[in-house]
Length: 303
Image 1 (spheres, rainbow, N blue to C red):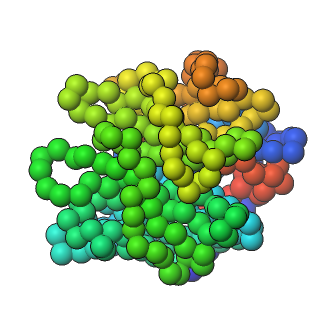
Image 2 (image 1 turned 45 degrees about the horizontal axis):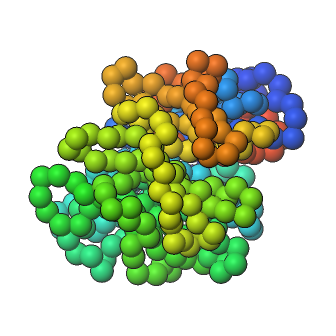
């Protein structure tokens, strides 16, 4: 088990209001673990744990890239992450998983094996999950390339689970007809919105697009034109007041984080200049949490 110790350590100003926001991310190549930051407004982010890794890798050689965080209907938080750039030559395609009831004490880190019915799969990147309340199951989805060749050609695949112990066979989840990675899903009223990265190489696109569905299971249709700048990836979105805030990792030099807002998924406003992010943070997830939990995490330090 991963245990954490809470000590009196004031890292952020008093957090007021019904909701605060927690931002996971990784640094460098993901070898140091998951970092986290708090905000009361989605603009100014302050690190927890003295800006040191919040959760460190337990498995030898495992990376913790692209950390996704989400809470189920039972109140349990789940974290997923990219285990490695590619699978080991003789090993499985896998992602990492851990769970927590309070975001302080975490389960042991475990692997989830994917794409076993696609033996030529090269990788599994940026896993995320969405809860389907109708079917009472989690949909876990990620980007994979099947087959050899010098260039990647990703599509989004998925598996389902009800208990995080048994998983369905991997299957194609979203195919816009071109190389795509870094998908994330949110519910906005009666429809579901997927934000994803157009990963095409020749010529390079490297921008964010949208797709829509009436169900978290899909089908995903009405792929939009790109709405972000170029060299952008790792989108995550949260609703703050009337606006959806879409955060992204501008990974080309100069690497930095940015944000866009929208109310209708048609027009977007760049609010990067009004936000302050953590130095060096990479692809992660923003979630809304109660202010009381944010106060607990603001006092967090690892032993």
